[in-house]
Amino acid sequence: MKVLSRYLLVHFSRILALCAAAFIGIYLLIDFFEKVDDFIDHKASAWDYLTYLLNSIPFIFVQILPLAILTAVVLTLGGLGRTNEVTAMRACGISLWKIVQPLMALALVLSFTLLLLNEFVIPWNAKQLNRLLEYKLKGKQQLQLTRQEIWYRNGRRIINIALASPQKKSLEGITIFTFDEQQDLVARTTARQAFFSAGSWQSQEVIKRTFAPATGDLIQTEVLSSQALQLERDPEDFFTREDINSELNFRQLSELARKLEAEGYDATHQRVDMHNRLAAPFTCLIMGFLGVPFALQKGRKGNIALGIGISLAIGIVYFIIQSLVTAFGYSSALPPIFAAWTANFIFLLSAVWLLLNVRE
Image 1: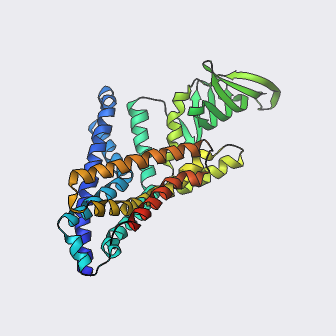
Image 2: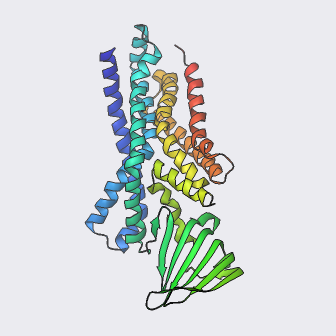
Image 3: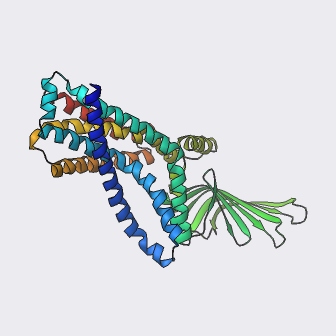
């Protein structure tokens, strides 16, 4: 069995490497042509192109690996079925599980590899890509963040926002520090929440405190029932900040969620992304199991084009379901852990049911 396992692993690894390289190349090509105008318009240097390439490949790899494993399993077992090698193995008394065991073991190893990449490598790649594409090439003013909090300067004011939700067009935990020409604090305005309406940020229960420039003593406290906040930003300016979760690993997302909840803010988005950090890598193993029955049921009637077509169709269905349940999680219609694991659970049950229907 060691010789057979080695043979299957070598055959599978070659096809997996080809599939992964092909998917990365296609993904990178499409993505680059969408962004090439920004590179050209801002006269990007050779180092910018290299930075984009080096940081995109790991980021793309973790996204396409489950689909590559699915395709590789279908092509590997389908190819062995067309040459009657699977039939020969079964005739020798080797069970279906013994045949696919080396492939599933490698899929499990790759799942843990993705888990480590998501924790230690991909957040750093995402940060470098965001810095390159959003700030250096598009020329946007970079917003400084500390644990998701947004800080930026506007004239003599420094504005701090605890949480931005661009899709809801809302901000939470707004604090505006106003300074005079000598950089002495003269006022501090706080608002718990603000919504973008009619071209401005409207807030309820605004508290404005005025200080003496020389001593810093509190002079006046004014409570306003409603006021328009001059933040000099549109909701679109905070869209990249909503994607900041891609720059955080599981541990950082967990800490951020606890911090936001302790301060009374909604951390559903962070909780969903946190659980996705654990659920996404194990899609590799599930896709591996799912590819086995499709490959064996086609047998000698299958071909490469059909195998790739089946794999892409399954990948599209998985992406649709995962996107749907994740959206339900973001809107609090599903608990975060269910939003992250539901698609995996559905496809795992489908794989088990199909495997049970494969004739020995």
